[in-house]
Image 1 (cartoon, rainbow, N blue to C red):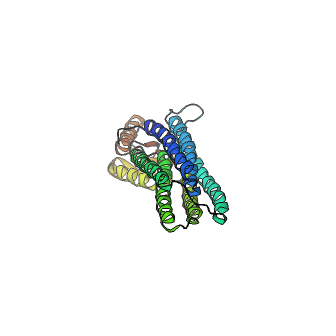
Image 2 (image 1 turned 90 degrees about the vertical axis):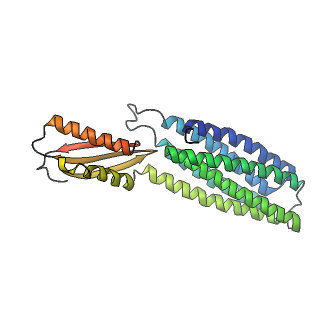
Image 3 (image 1 turned 180 degrees about the vertical axis):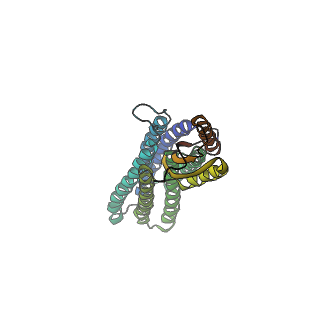
Length: 290
């Protein structure tokens, strides 16, 4: 699974989402259940969000250019933000659909067959979510992570719907149908808000303390070759981290020697963290810290 690229996994999410949507729509049409309708509506959002995610992953892979000197990776944060908003929108639609059915419950048709379809779609969703999460961790992609968590929420809510509708079938309490749908919507709304917040943090250029600690460890391994270092700054852009720091060199070192030394530091950082790009500003030893 680790050998699968972000683009391939994103495309698989789109194709898989379309298949799952068709299965869930069949389950709703067979039964007339508003809870299964809510499940199908969520899958429509899944497909739209996966398409946005696929575009974002493809764009993020483009190299830096004149208008985007630091690359295009932040589009993944935008994709994840859009996905969070879509999840919240789906929750609102589900609540609106469920309220009418709550006050006017109806008997459900061919429920066993419909639940069979729904369970099959849930299994497919679980496999897709697992694959997306594996690749997102391997590649450090917030866009794939957002889609994986979105699908995981779909799996959880689908299982709850199946269990609840089985109970409704056994007891005849068909008012459980809209209640389940509303419960699903609340879970979705919570996950959507969390995704929006996480994506927003990435857009605000937050520092990366884990990467900073690793850079400091690497610098301390070479402490005899410079006076001090200071003003370490980091920011994340998609799955890449950009770092910069000031390095006070010993007075007898030439410009060429200082240049070779900073290149060595940059190579050590790259070997330890291939997703980190570091820029080092060399200063004379008497330079005061800012």
